[in-house]
Amino acid sequence: MDKFVSTVENQEIPLHPLDTQAAFLNVPYHFFYPNTNQSDSFMPKNVLRDSFYRALMRFPILAGYLRSEGTGKTTVVVDRGDLNMPEYAESNSDILFSELQEAKFHHSSWPKGLSTTGPITIAGSDGRIKLMNVHIVRLKDNTGVVIFVSMPHYVVDGTGFFSFVELWGKLCMAERIADSTLMQQAAELQFVFDRDLISRSLPAKRKPLNAETVDVYTGFSPLAEWLAWLSPTTRGSILSKAKFSSNVVSHTFRVSQESLESLRNNVCAHIDEPELQVATTHVLAALVSKMVAQAHLKCREQSTQSSGVLSTLMSLLSGAIFGAETSQSLNLLADVRHGLGIADQGYMGNGLIPHNTQCALSVLETPTDAKSLAAATAIVSKIYGNADGPLVASFVDMLLAHPSCFTRPMVYLARHPRSLVITNETGFKLYKADFGDGLPEWVCTIPSFVANFIGFLPSPPSSTDIVVNITLKEPVMKHILNNEFWRDLATIVY
Image (cartoon, rainbow, N blue to C red; front, side, top):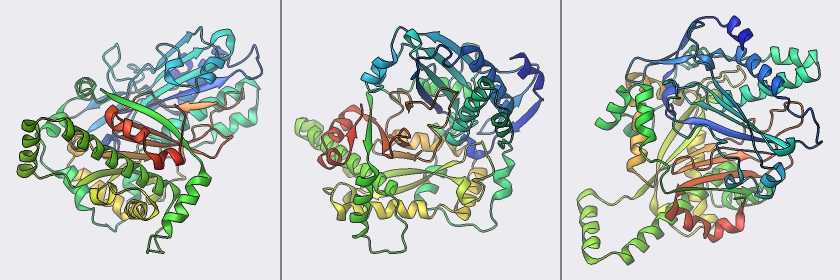
């Protein structure tokens, strides 16, 4: 650690408005490594620690602290005399790696206290928000190691997160086998933390944002405005008590590429727009949206059947006054690096923006078949197809004009329980970090994130399946588990 401190240069990194979009959330992942060869030198703790601090030399922002100026303007301050060092914890467990394998890595089998952060970014014991937390758990009889890493969205998205973990593994392996070539390859990797890269890459042309997105981000909301004025520490403390994860359950599924490709072909036969680019993940997003809408419909029907006369009348009166909801808010996260042409420039800041649209319940609640799924898929594909540079530029313009608007989507999602946030992480480097003993056997996030979050993840390298993590309120999830179309397509992992 001392060597790292000696290399730190004082700097201030003003965060870009894009960094604030999910700033209240962490990026937390667990990496499960088996000691396949039963080696005594498996994942040596001293080398793990030394290589961690060498990787940190390339990511000094993770040793900085947040300085808030209110209404969304935040700066990361890296001060050699006042470093906010990452939390780096180590512990041992009496659980064998084989026990985790037998449980298919279900969280009920994990070592106690494995996850040292939750979904919401909050201050640590010293009163500061740590910009990285690490917990390394060595399993019984040295049968394996589990590495938990968490970073807040203030400083990275998945690209930056997995780039650090991959670099850490590469440096560890290079030291263990004394490979100067591998060390040189690590030294040549490019990591850009200058948020001005986004501003410099914006095109001159602009494209109008859809009305739904503008409404979510600019609509009047006293609660959102108040949250935006709070410091990151105070805001995190309040949100951590908001029970975003109460009565929430997560399940993980696997869907084969072959099944998805077959479904995509059937769906495309019913889309009369040959120029529309339809990916398998678009079909998957549309299918999940339909399943959730159908599940909410069944919940409402069951509630109506079990409600008394007074409750039913109050529900009808509320619908008459405020209007019944006729659509489901769908928020698809897209990476701006591709739209701005900087995907190869090593940008480590948050590059994700949500594209919001309202999908009519008349489309989503209909029974699922290739034809009805085609209508929902076309909506999803158009959203992704529209996410180019001019649209990103318009989105950034909106954020700059309304710097406190970053809390509005959160408030909107809380007020609309049918809203979904879908993130496609299949292109992230979940299984690239090799510390010298092979790749992780399983990588996953924390057990229950926040309600209505859907994540598409890659499978371990031995498979091409897509892993689907679904987090919903428990009553809604029960109907997902009984959805016949989904049960025919997906296999539950846990």
